[in-house]
Image (cartoon, rainbow, N blue to C red):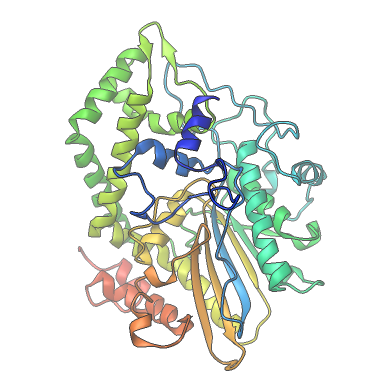
Length: 464
């Protein structure tokens, strides 16, 4: 048994021996900490394994669950791209030898992997908005390029797509059998890893992947803010947030000693090592069960990794507690949330466009949305994370619509700031659409303070 398998067994992320009635343990990929099942103290290895999101366990999800008299009328899915090669290299160390070709007889595997490669190899012609048509449709380098989607990343989203297909298409018939191109709304940033992740999810989701019906729009901003990206106050919040990060790092003497030790091992200045963002490379090695780098001066060890990962977790925790990031998140997430709720309102009015919306994005897309929704307890987006907004119609009162929010298959609707008090105020079993509308059109600006009543005013308000 290798080290990674042992660690996976330790934290119950893969099946273990049957313990009761012949039923094996299920995945515990939680998105909100649970005192009953989490390690007794914060464990950086446990958190790193959750972040890796290694395929292999059949995932239980709560998507598509509602009282029988509700009808699903649209779903809006935000994903983070799947597992990728690092964006940064640790100087003076050998690049990790990870193969980015897609090979059927190599783990992790998915039953649709070969068909996916064959279909992508035919090419889409002019099916994408510029400049997406210049990007490769699947990974093909024996030694991954920086930021390239790995086979693990493709399999993660083939699984996501198949899971959503079983729920939304087979069970709820969200799309008709003769669905039209306009019933899908697809957007991605201009990175190959997001385009390929979106394609993998769609290939697992659609019963008939037809290039003539698949059109990805290009989104230049990772915030998916379209024509509303200029927001001076958002940038001020971000600058203050980055200053907070810097001060937290400055006050962590154990972290500084760890950087100094690692810099000595690879024989570079500490400042240069820190700038190389070593946690990105180390996480990739960890997720792929590859040894950390060694030189004639010694080896980077799991102890080094634990210190840096612990600081990263502490930084995320403090970030959620401070209002600086919340200000950034409210302004950063508003444009895409406003677009989403507008599409929901159009569907509620009877329009049959954008019944399934997919935004293939990044951690820096999902994290502000989670924070803006008031989900301060949610974990940082793992590889292939998915955040879903479902719109439901009450069959008994067809004019009434409700929403559900799910994060990695967990229903978090009643953790959101716009619906956490719903049960105390209403007997309705689901969160009314008007709660979300009011939150995005009004309450987000109230939370920012300053008396602003719209996005433009909030962005151009002076100071904090």
